[in-house]
Amino acid sequence: MSDQLSIISSEVMEMFYEPDNFLIIQRWKGGGLDEEKFKQTILQVNEQGERMANMGMKVFYEIIVPQFSFMVPPDLQEWAAEQTKEVIKKVGLQKIAVVIPTAVQEQLNIEALSVEQTVEEMAKIGVAYRIVGSEAEARGWFLET
Image 1 (cartoon, rainbow, N blue to C red):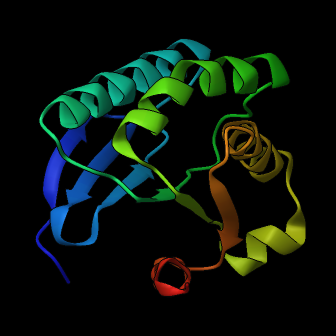
Image 2: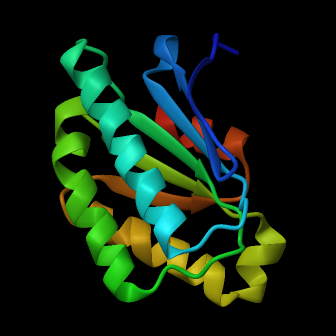
Image 3: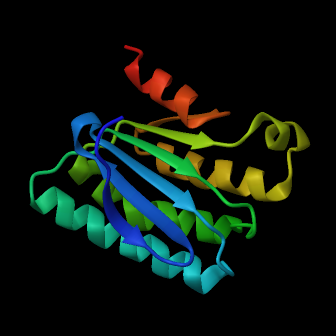
């Protein structure tokens, strides 16, 4: 595995960058996540993305590992997508994999659905996305041509 650089570490989420793989990994921890913390975290992610883009760093792939403690309502999904679309373009993001364990996928709980819908909003700007069962599966998908 490549070296990981810590980009964000908070009670809500950890974000790492693997420069050798042009990969960002977001591991959401919950941490009392609510609408305000979600918005603050999205803005922090965007700020770091802008900083990385300005430094010439590229992010082609992203793995999102959600913690299901907060349902992202449709208006917040759209807000998150609108807030992130320019940063996504600047860093060169091409694929997003959302890791939802198979057992959770089968339950189709509302939190998992809200995560999927949030990523679908982001995908509207041309980023491919896939729901996968593990980080290994995500990495395998990134390597496909």
